[in-house]
Image (cartoon, rainbow, N blue to C red):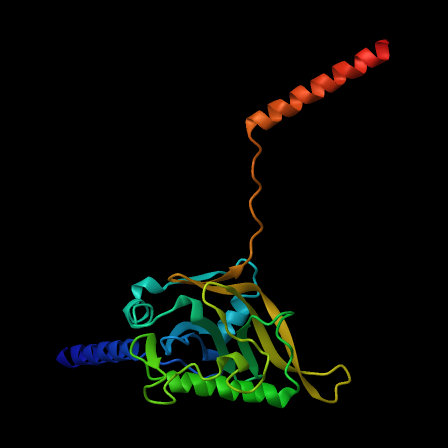
Length: 256
């Protein structure tokens, strides 16, 4: 019995250790989507592991009703370490999200590019995207909990912004990052066989939903049409009265 209790205790300690060191997974289909937020004034980068795996996200987000919301106000690393840091300036802050898997390969990433994310030149560039994104996740790791803040003046290669806007220095014009408070389109880029069946090419599709980081809320979901505004009763009464006047005028004209 004592041995059994020791086994349970050991298992509990392992679970606790795992939750305290929630590294961003880069293991194929279980690779996890992460967000980086950078303020060029304070020179701080906030990184957050959403815990959403690439395979599950591709499957779930195929539905236009899929939605995700996370309240960052519960994270003191965000509220005190990033928003509360000396020199923080919301106007100079940008954010982006990305995840990659070498299995197909697949890349999911935000973009504020006008006209949408342009396909990579070839399949090898997509493979480089994958390695660059996995490398950035590795720089962020290990993190205590699910987030961390690093400064440009701190230890290099520990998760700083690192050219996120060009998929970490690989494709100019990707516009992966967008302004804090803005909405970013989300894209799936993978490698497929061309129509001739003799070469591999990159393919880009856009998710129905988009990301938004505003205030303390990170959310993903499809845009919804504005609800119809009901007309006030006075408008209906005015319309009915106007129709009555028009009918009366028409009758008088016909009588003449």
